[in-house]
Length: 154
Image 1 (cartoon, rainbow, N blue to C red):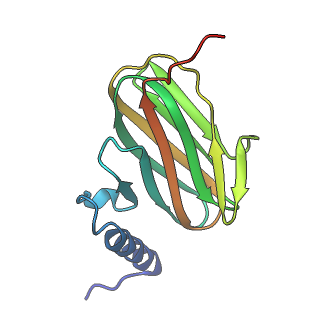
Image 2: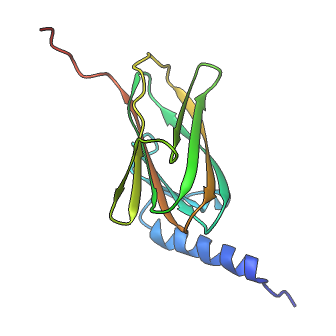
């Protein structure tokens, strides 16, 4: 007889919620059931399901060549976390809830970091979300890379 403990029940519930919520999205491997993709695999938004308390999540995103246009992390209000991302040994980005770049909007904490427009190659970015504390809920990362808008010279 196989009995599920409280931790396993929580895991099963989280995976079930992720699968039900992502029913319209492309199939995800079971080990990534805590990550929900919105849009195509190059789409700008990556969603994560967060548990209560501390947590660490890793994921990767393929992006085209260009510059970072948008780097925004949205978390449940009351979350303390930081997110790092790297593309090989070429470049890295970081955003933290401990900085002044965060605004509370309703029950969400929205953090946006401006990134210098350095040309970046097409490739896979590796991300690591370090959740230090806070409630369970959804987090989303908007990480858009592309051609910078044309500037007019005065």
